[in-house]
Picture 1 (cartoon, rainbow, N blue to C red):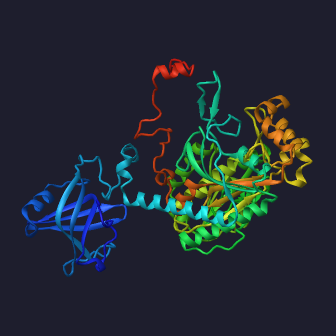
Picture 2 (picture 1 turned 180 degrees about the vertical axis):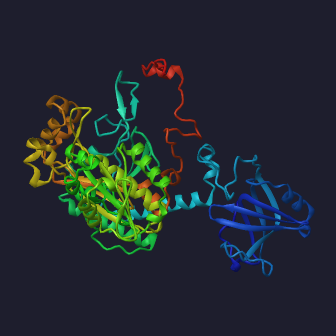
Length: 593
């Protein structure tokens, strides 16, 4: 037996017992012949002591140890000397007095130490991930991930869901992002695709009569990355038959209530708050608004329509909007340089033409470099619209609806962080519902599905499906936590004719639809029940519940923002013989100027 106890297990109850520990050397301290060794595993840390009384052989081994050596310690548990307790450690009242130290494996000097206070850069941590994963914070996060997934599995088992695995090798279908393709060796010129989601398979399961399906599913999307996105990710995927949107959201409400209580100590009330997509965009400029703080958007378009000020009036006459946010009571913290930085931010990141600003003076007047260009009635109207008080700062954009939404949402998020307008440990759960069914892609010159092409329209909007697609709303719902989309779902189309109509609107001819989705269209004709579901991002949930801001810190082996694994150096080249077997020829890399 290589160990009798873990390094986080021993307490005063074990005093006098002979034990064996195994783990990594974290610290070595030589106090004039008495050597103290901190031995660590994922369960905790134990102080080991060796002195001349235990013999020179044991002492010599202890003195030869280096950080991250793997050791086996045999010894007797003893009470620490009076005044030497460490309250930061669960094992802080005891120590193990070593009678034997066996080095299981010597370690080279690592590029960084897991316990060092200043964390190494991310690229270095990802290259040596096996060392980074020894950090206590990483182990704590992965343990949280494991417990969260178990809790979710238990919850759905209690509610009669069936866990069904769906294929990883499937067919390439247009679902919004690029597929990862896998060439087939035995079928010349043909490819499998890794699943972006189990969407079609879970719909088939509903048609097959498995009315409550759930799966912890691996999914793959070849898309541009950011801090909260990965090319391969994990989602809690579920589907239910004979349900409407309220039923699906209700089952998730129950899950969130349990997870928030068990993991965060927060008591949520179900049903969770809901707002429509239109309301979210109008008030916050985002379909995933962070509701931990206010700073809501104020629309001044009608007021701007009445002014002669060219910037405001010109934007409105061109079909745009004038909208803004109020930074309450903090105007004194904004120098001209800081406002210029915010102006560059909305210009460079969101394509805004500029940023108008007003400071509310102690006498209640609005002051800005552009104040002299505005009529008194317009200034009074702005003050009233924002309910502005002395010390407030008003920030306005005059641009298209899309730019004002993106720009003001970006400003709102940035300023909330810089001004510390919320407690980082707070959690806010809500739903955004009634999304548009379609959005127009000007590059493609046609409508595209906002969620996916299998989403059902609201019953009252069914007549708009062909006549006025821009007015058609979807039976779609997103779970939003702290300004992140934590999950998204829809009620699906279960009528073959409606599905065919949607395909045609999206530019798929009957022949193309048959070629790509023939199995689904056929299945819908054989008794498809009303059904719908949702997928929750497991990685993102862990990130939020752990209080992190980078999704890579809650995945054991993540990719970088360039979709690379620095540890294994994937993606990499393959043997030419293997390419020949797959009938693949690599073209020369294009020369870029």
